[in-house]
Image (cartoon, rainbow, N blue to C red):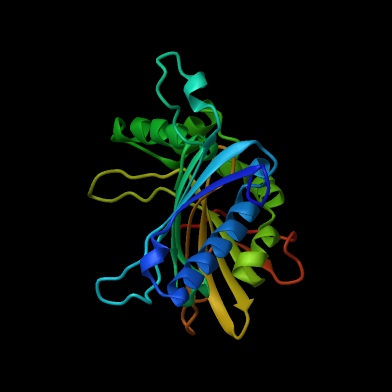
Length: 261
């Protein structure tokens, strides 16, 4: 899917004809960065016969050289044949990317769609909203009932299967990773529990130390969100109780209980 040739139907909606060559080059750089992340995040889709549409938004009202947002929608080629009413089926993936200036790194990524189990996530959140006495035990039980592969008690399975090193072509050399389940905290406001795992990563990328936060859904363990920025001294993840994976031993996890972001 994410490559050249007949396996990748790429439609770039670029109005580059009115922009300078520098802007067009920036758009191509942004797309290459997006492609590297999608290859790392969704390997199961790489060799599938799918339709990929890339949209690039270039800001030009104040600065024609500014970076733009990138969208990527992945769908089956004949989606209309999968619906009895003839309407297009929902996309497998619908992702939003916010590259930093000059595409030196990805500042923000969000993904939804059937490939990342968005409907199952919604079903979980609907159960939470209907229960005023939510608890961590109910999180565990509900995720298990809905068929989640990586409920909070499946920490070791998640750590083994996620393989964070596959993200290094995008994030840089991973030096530290703190991994934890998004745990329920009781507040006076509305109950909000999201079925996510979070990996807080420190990496070396060129001459920069980067801090990233990657979010994975619990049903199949696939990436649904990313945020990143250069680290400052106080940024390194030090959350008590999270599992830590250190450079040179990314599969060796220090024993720790589930933590809270």
